[in-house]
Amino acid sequence: MTRKIMPSRRGHITQKATIANRRTVYLSVDDVVKPNEVFLRVKGNANSELICCFDVIARLISLCLQAGIDLPLVVGRLHGTRSEPAGAVVGDDRVKFCDGTLDYVGKHLLIQYCGRDDLAQVIKKELS
Image 1 (cartoon, rainbow, N blue to C red):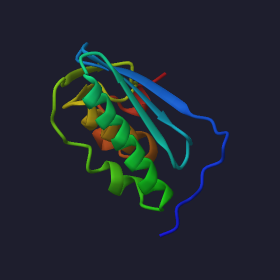
Image 2: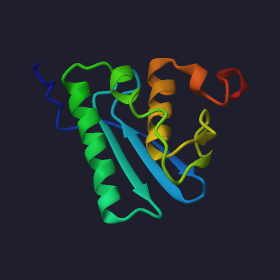
Image 3: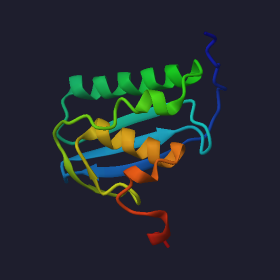
Image 4: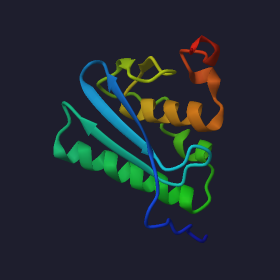
């Protein structure tokens, strides 16, 4: 497989969300239509090893997308994973509950970029 080379300058959209009032997640995606790169930063009750693991997961997602693997196949593995903290999500318009950080990332990306409205706790019509 050939990897898509990313340009040196590119824009990102960042979604900030807080999970269970214990962990803040900054999820940045490089494209509003077809993502090729994902960045994931976490703050709050996360040690350096866990922060490193989230960074590596984001890099692996990016490499998969740049190699042409479909987003639903890549992030579908994240949705449904359970870890702490889990609970209410504040800051995301569509996701209001998750089973952990990776579940949140999977849900957000599947809803936002793959049309998986069945995973959203808030339907688009309710947004104004």
